[in-house]
Length: 622
Image (tube, rainbow, N blue to C red; front, side, top):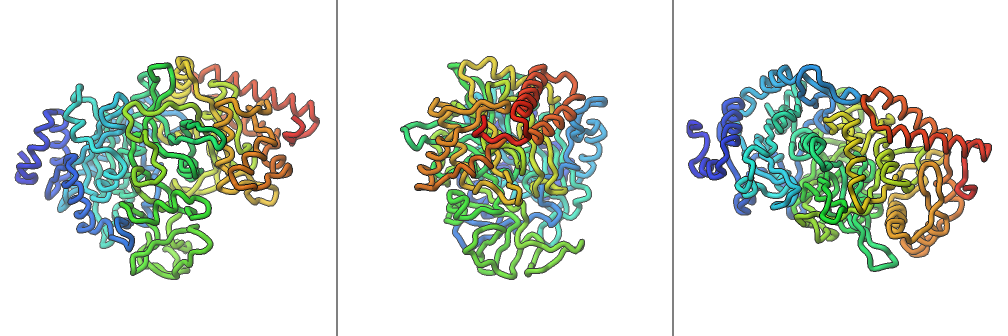
C-alpha cells in the first residue's frame, strides 16, 4: 500500500483503529509530502521512551547537564507565533472579526498544499495520537498529528495525554482533529530554511490544521493554539466554551478551604506565574474546555498535561515554584536559551545572583556578548520568547484533579492584561454580564510573544483574540448564554500586575499577585466587604493591609501604596471605553448587554468625576 515506507507492524497499528477516514488522511499525507519512511507510535511507554532517544539522534534536541533536560533551537526568524502567515480558510465571502487573517478556502488550500508537496523528502513522517483533555471524558477531543519534526512530537508527548487507545473508542469515527506539519528544508543547524514560505492554515470545515516551513511550537504544535481555534469553532456551534485559561486552586490563609479559579491573560502577562502562585496547586496553565456540571455549576478541564512556558524573567525570587521546577532533574525541553559547552543553561532575567557567561550557543548559533544580527540589532543571550516544556505531574504543586474526567468546579475567573497606567490591580465584577464585559474589553501592551513591535496597546477579548475563528458577537453571546443557564455562576475579577507610577516604575512586585488573588478568593466566600465603584468592587485598605502582613510575614502595606494603586483615573478609563466603543461599533450583531454595560460604566465614571470635581479619585474618597 505504501511501497515499503511503513513496516508491517506500524501498518497494523493503523488498521487496528478501524477508521477509514483516518486511513484516507494518512494516505493523502504520504502521497503529498513524500517521506522516506513512516513510523507510527501508540500509547506504549517503551515506544515513547525510544522515540525520545530518536529526537537526540536526529539532532533536533541536545542533552544538557541536568538529567532529563534537553535544548532545542528554532530558526533565528522563527521565534514566535507568525500572525501574518496564520490564517483561517473560509468559503468565499466569509470574514472574521477585526480583520483576522482569512483566505478563501480553495485558494489557501492550493497554496499551502503546494508548499507541502514533497516537503518530507528524505525525512521521516511521524504519526502520533493524542487526547485533548482527560481520557474517557465527555470533555475531550481526539487528535491525529502527522509531522516530520521529532521535536514537535516529543513536545506533544509532554504536553498532551496519549490518544491511541482513545481513537479505538471513538463512537463517531469522523469526530477528531487532524494536523499535518512539516518543518520543511533544514540547514546545518536543523532549522527551517524557507521561512518566506511559512504558512499555518486552519481549516474548520475539515477540523484540521496545515502547517509548513516552521518549527517554533506556536506555529508547529497544532495540538496547542492551533487546535484551540478549532475547538472554539466547535464549542461556539454547540453549548459549551473553549477558553485561553489556566485552572488553579487557591487556598485561604485563614481557613481550611480550596477554591478553583480559571484565568485568561495574554502571552507574557503573568498567566503561568498566576497559575503557579506559591501555595497554589495547578491543573493547567493555558487552555480549558468548559461545560455545565450536573448541579448547574461551571466545570473545566485542562486539555493539556504539560506547560509550554515563557522562561524570560523566571527566577528564584519572583517565581520560586517555576524556577525550582525547571532547575532540578526531570524531563524538560528548553528552547532558544543560552547553553555552554558544559551543558549549563542561562536566560534573560534569571536572577541577580546568577553570573551570566559572555559566550555560548543560542538561537543565533555560536554567540558572544555584543554580537549583532544582519540588521545591526544586538543579539541577547537568549530570545525574549524562549520557552520551557515540562509535564505538570513533574511539579511539586500539581493538583490532584489534573486528570479528573469531570474536571473541577470553577468558582472564580480572573481576566488580566499588561496595562501601565489605567486598570487597578484587582476589581470584582458586579455580575456575570459585567464579567463578560470585563473579559471582552481586555487591553494589553504587546510583548515579544508575537512577531512585531512591542509596547503597542492592543484589544484582546478574553485574551483570546488571535484564536476566535467565529464572529465576536457570537462568541460574546455564547458567554452570556452560558452564564445565564448556570445555577452557580463564578465571580469574575479583573487584574493588572503592570501598573506604573509617574516615575515609570512598577507599583507592584511580582509576588504581590498572591494578595490580589487571595482577596478575590475571600470575596468568593464573603470574607471581605468591598468599595462599590462604576468599574466594579475594589478592596478596602484594611483587608489588603492584613493580607500583605499575613502573606509576607509582617510586610507593611501603606496607605500611600494603596492610594496610588487603587485610585481611579477617570479620564484614562473614559478614554479606554471610548476606544472600546470605536472598536466594537462596527461589529455586526453585538449583544445589547455589551452596550448596556459600557453605558452604565461610562455614566457612572462621569457622574463620579462631576461629583468629586477631579479626574483622579482616591479610594479613600469613595
